[in-house]
Amino acid sequence: MAEAETVAAQQPLSSESVGNADIVIGLATYNNADTIGNLVRAVVAGLPQHFPSKQSVLVHLDGGSEDATVQLVREAADSTVPLIQDKYVLDKFLTPAHGLPGHVSAARGIFQSAEKLGAAACLLLDATTQNVAADSIHALLRPVVEQGFDMAVPYFRRHRYEGGVSNGIVAPMIRALYGKRLRQPLGSEFALSGRLAGQCVKLETQNGQPAQCSVDIWLVIEAICGNYRICQVFLGEKPERAKAPSADPSEILVQLLSALFTATGATVATWQKARGSEAIPSFGGDAAPSAEPSAQVNVKRMIEAFRLGYQTLQEIWGLLLPPATLLELKKLTIAPDEQFRMADDLWARIVYDFALGYRLRPIARDHLLRALTPLYLGWLASFIQETERSTPMGVEARLERLGFAYETQKHYLISRWRWPDRFNP
Image (cartoon, rainbow, N blue to C red; front, side, top):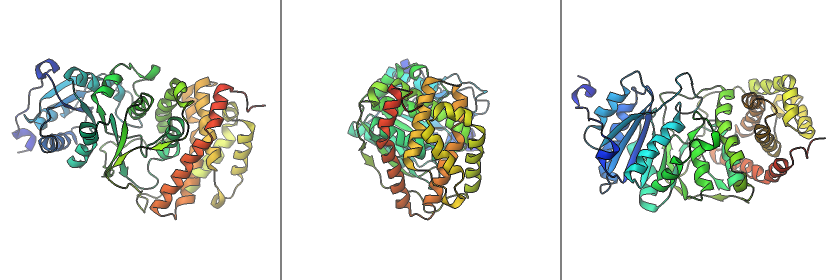
């Protein structure tokens, strides 16, 4: 007989009946029956061991699953910790490239429960995680529960070309604009203090940002701009996810960069004052990328996509990029494949120009972000060719140089933001 049939399901409670909690374990789901039972059992079983003196509560919000997800959560939780279950609203027609549909809405619902319960810490879990290591999940909570941090962001060991948008755009731009060096800001799990969770409850969506945008970026930038204490925790090998993110770079760029560029426009007063960058406290070890890529990458196809973009997107790129940049791109189109290299400062300025274009809206924002795709593939091809024979530490050093280039070009973004036509004829 299956285990799920032999365990008595816990009846869900309400915030009022639970009373108070020290730790809220937040879980948002949508059709996650394949993974949810093992995840809940692993996390719940370790709570008495890792935090024996703390009262923990599991808060589960479901987006209307059509499988057995809700029942499996009840059975896996058993009677070990109190369980609160509710629903959140999602757009079932939305298939996100990154994360859970409506994750911002679900996260806010979890934060509201944490606020009602007076929790000192709140952990957001990814319901798609397979083969979860319970110790690593609790390691993410420890800096918040025991050391007074307001946010703990995970980072993992992954192959060198995984997370290209994070490595090439999100992480270096957050570093340059806000002065914090986060290895992997697009974490699937986060631990937050009660006071930061309470602050996030007050945000309907970040300055009009739609609910399907990346909750990762929303939380990280809110924490930085609010001067909350942030750390990052190494959790070992990156776990597999039952629902892999979209492989379409255009979809990834639209969803992640709409969140990043919206936040950029909403926090101008903060990032224009920030100077330089600093490393943030890290716990748990080294996360140098693995020596071998997990899959073959077709660099030639990326370069061809860049050249085709140059031919077909001239009109759009001309609305966003100054003539000097367009000239540099033209030179790249005639470079031999083996010599194809996009300079870091050129790439940083391109990203900044698109951030400005997102603010000014010369064309629809979705179309604008999709027009970045060939340029991103060109940068990625250049990065792969430059690092394919590097050691893992060599790749780390290469990403460090890229982050520094974003910092040195920040003056360009500030100038263009204040005087958008300054670099145009």
